[in-house]
Amino acid sequence: MTAAPRTRVQRRPVHGVLLLDKPLGLSSNQALQKAKWLLRAEKAGHTGTLDPLATGVLPLCFGAATKFSQQHLDADKVYETTVRLGIKTSTADAEGDVIQTREVSCTPGMVVEVLDQFMGLISQVPPMHSALKKDGKALYEYAREGETVERAPRNVVIHDLELLDMQLQGEVPFLSLRVACSKGTYIRTLGEDIAEALGCGGHLNALRRVQTGPFDQAQCVSLEQLDAMAENERWSALQPVDVLLPGYTEVSLDSENAGRFLSGVRRRGPWVDCDHVAVYGEHPRALLGTAHVRGGELIPGRLLSPIEIQQILEKSPANEPLLAEQV
Image (cartoon, rainbow, N blue to C red; front, side, top):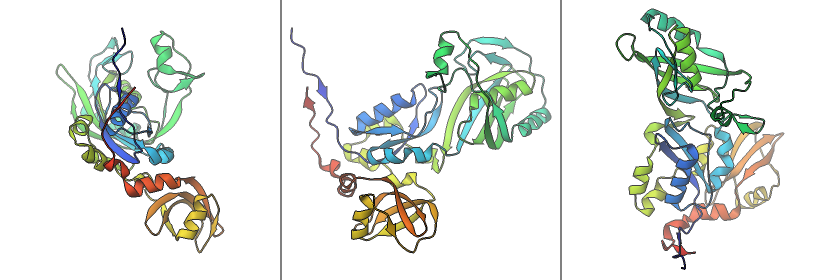
């Protein structure tokens, strides 16, 4: 019996950044693939993972934007989280098995003192249930096999630790926290360590990323919202590529110098030394790529291709037919 033809979405060049409000339960890659399918995009990537048990801000890069996703990996993050006190689990979150139960006897004054101890530069041991790799294998893979491997502690910075709410008595004692931190901070580990310092242990039962770098949750769209949009609305939901370059010094080049720059040739001009430069063509105004300046020379870094620049200027996918191809 011959199988029926399988319908496959016709991909198209899509360039820009989608600020996604990632739902609970999906991995960052699963969320990326769903958004990529809805946009019919040829090429996509994200700017760092967000735990499946976490919701919130996940910038997704499409087309030319993937060239600058690395620029965002070092961005500071802000999370809101709830720590369930008195119950310790195997994974430091609500998905794990309960491994210890203790009475919660701390006071509000103790909570404030302990939170102060976790401000600034702190050391964390990465959790076994994380994507960090050891000998080419993710730690969570070892954990699923019942293994625990040695992990070196790492330094992270807690810029701000705000107590939003707390309940220290009753059946469900908890702390609600807002955490502003450096890249690489494990919020599950932070919550577990805070609860341990309070003498009762605990685990995370809610986690939401409300900001990453300059991107805030108010700017985000959900997969449900994206799915409900018409084709042209989905396209307009994208942010321009250069939102990934906040704080970069801007340099504009005329058409002749822009062409040479895109060929990788250094340009000379009245520029002061600068490590982070966003280079634009003048007419029409279009992002060409990144560079740095040394001794009056503009030295190319990551460059867009002429085809990518033309596609961005034309926004041609809005005019493409929506017919799927048969395979």
